[in-house]
Length: 306
Image (cartoon, rainbow, N blue to C red; front, side, top):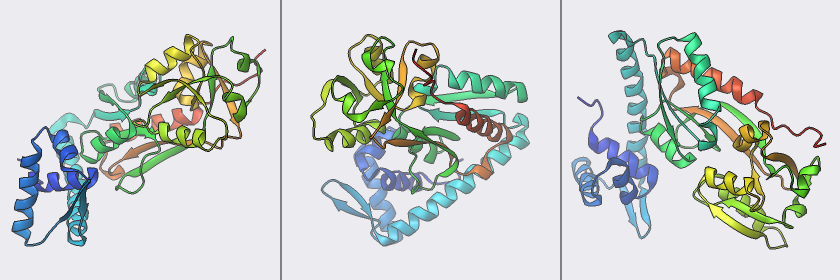
């Protein structure tokens, strides 16, 4: 039996996404059913919880009070379920994590291998996605840890660890820019660019930089796929602007080169986040520690290109 009512969960999701339609998609329900639950909740409480706007839903002052309390209940519920799980004898050995695609191929298996050394019965449920999806799943208690770029600090997450990473230019080893120790921002505009679109966190960051430049960029490819982007760069379709972690494996394998980008002043915060760090089971806490240590050790190989 759920400890938090469906109506309370629905209200929190509408508040988080600012949209009945988006909340309905997350819970696989019809928007009309979600709207009906909100209306019923407002009738039961005798007050309006949301302002209906042309482009979404905005909490009233009363709604803000209720949502804050619902989120407190969700955190308490997570602690309770974690405690019950431990008492049932599972030992809290399952880890549920959301992370970016660039961390899935090499980083995650290596970290999980270390976790298995410490906790032989550990199991893993891993979900790949962008920052919005991962943090949304974290707030909905669908995962326990999120490893993502630029996690929002204003939705109740607990940032357990954060690493600042500077963006740089990425290209093939035989590209003219690969022979340099560092690349100046104006050099980037000489070549076709392969970029993330604005559905990914880094998309708007790079786009803002491009918009502020007096010289128009050459956009060769725009995509929401890390796999497509890196494949295009590897094939020589252009260069890209990425964080070191995005191409850690490729740089180590010498299939791509990462060069610091002077004049761009672009950085990301790579975060390990939880809803409530105190509610994590011992295995998940250890995994968070392993991930944090591993992230601290990740540095792009930018040695002498000769």
